[in-house]
Amino acid sequence: MFKKITILLCVLVLASCGSKKKVASSKKRPPVKREVVVNKNDSRDETEKETLESTSKTTVTINTVQDYIDYFSPVAKQNMVEHGIPASITMAQAILESGAGKGTLVRKANNHFGIKCHNWGGEGVFHDDDEKGECFRKYSDPGQSFEDHSRFLTTRSRYAFLFKLKPSDYKGWARGLRKAGYATDRRYPEKLISLIQRYELYNLDKEVLKGRYEEVVDTPVVVAKSSGNVHVVEKGETLYSISRRYNLTVDVLKRLNGLRDNIIAIGQKLIIKN
Image (cartoon, rainbow, N blue to C red; front, top):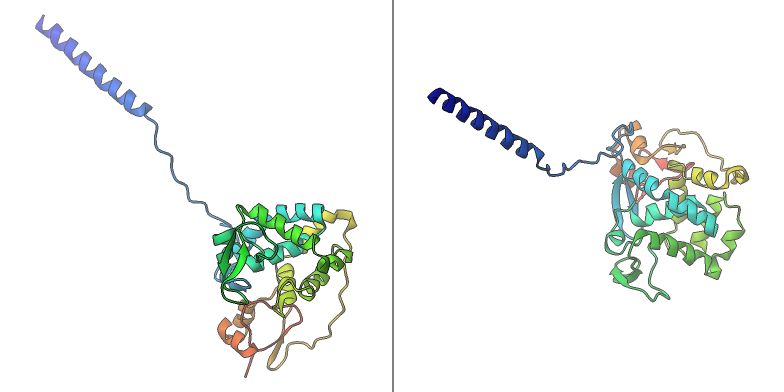
């Protein structure tokens, strides 16, 4: 009798342990936080950086710029369909003015194009630009900023001549924006053109226009080959790659050429020696 009672107790104990394990395993585990790795397989040199200087001075990597393009290019292409502004121009302006989404105005106001408060009934933020404490438009989300940029260009008569250009003429648009007074920086056109060529943003225009895309031949510029103390910028080159080629630092190269930022254009002559 005693043995039977002992065996029964053992069975009950084992059953109790098993049920506890079952309950414990049925509890929901807290969600695992996963780190998002961007461009993990990108072969480009992540040490190469670019300083974008317009409404704010922002240093970004090539990968940061490319991620920004990937995220916002659908919006730029849609705006090209609806408003006729080349997607390449929209993206180049956004990259430059917003510091590829990392600039001060983006953080403070979702303002990706550096548009100021003139004739604006919405909210604004104050930021130093051409003058101290200038008012810039504030948006609730980036989409509003992109839409307002299109509306800004399509509703002002001083930009009307741009819409007579071929939609594939991004160089004409870049120069025309400066001429119409969008920016006070004399090198604004070169900066936009450089970004479009470096990141092949003209392909966005091709995707929208498809069979209607026409290559616009720009006035050829005759330049001498790189020699002696001068290097002529070729397609795909950056200040970083040129500085490495001549065993210089980017800062030295900028100082030799009086550059305030890292924007260069194809055909531009750079001094590489004193």
